[in-house]
Length: 343
Image (tube, rainbow, N blue to C red):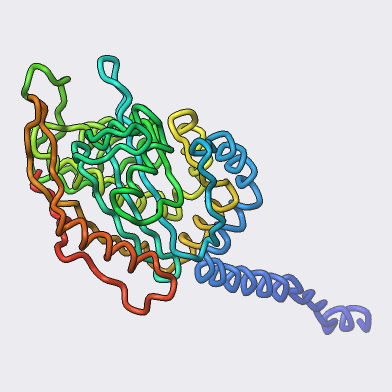
């Protein structure tokens, strides 16, 4: 009886304490904190990952694209200082010489996160430095590549050209596709109708345009040179915005590799990478201002040229000097903002 009573009154063994709860709570809390830090410092983490895994590949590719402008030494410029860059779009086709189809004199002010894009009409009639002739400005690249183009633009604008960057349009299509296309403000279908031009059609009002469509957008030439140079500036802005998206930073090595032989510059790789990182770390994309040299058409010996307005040249020279002045407290904005694309 005693044994049975003792058996009936025996206490149930205690369940072991749930020791796993505390470590789990710590882990979850840590993940939440890291997630918040990752969100807040998303750009820093992406840049860290880029420098850790991809910077070497990009540096090698940029080193391969480095090409001095003849005997013209590139200046030593800090990536935070204002600098000028001559953008050259080379539209090499089988039946045409290798002229600079696009010439954009740009000034970058990294500290203010501002960029000025000045379009120079390709048919502008001016002195070609190094040839002692007056002709269309786009012939300078055909005869003397980047050096002659830089010297000619410096002479015309009376402001320094620190660097150049030339890209053959042949590489544009794959570069755009590598970043997933670009947004372009096309309100009407773009189509070549003249038999002397290659077939080209770009549909209007699409959310994203492929590399092939972007190439058609910048190549279209059956309207004014004014509109064409405007499209080039709009494309540059659209591509810059696309490339600076977080999801596309990891694609930069691929973009540089695709550019390959289609891209040359006298900017060294260290300068480009430092500047690109500082640009990416800004809270917003750069503010871009646009201007195009003004003038009027003229015919000489049966050839059409673009005669630049002397008064407008004087205004532009003052504008560029202001933008390039590191001590400027007020930055001039162009008198007209021609950012709307009639096409």
